[in-house]
Length: 119
Image (cartoon, rainbow, N blue to C red):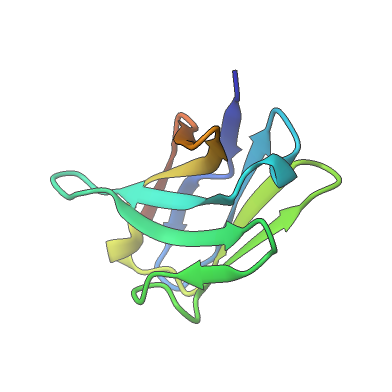
């Protein structure tokens, strides 16, 4: 069973920064893609940032230039550096991992961490 545990959420003023961390219970090289999604009350879950097995990042348009996804393969950690935060970034942020095995896709999720940006 894969476990992903997020940390680093909190309350920050608009314009501030937060760094989210995701600890993964096995080698992150075993996953095709890892990343972060968020869900605000009353809204659908949104992909925020992802990083592929090869280390290529991609971002939602709403966070480009402000958020950076990274990883530390030696520690099995994935990070989300969030700068210039806006009130509309307020949401529960969840780490996820995607793998393919025997033609089947498996998704794993963390429990989520709350990020609140005050105006």
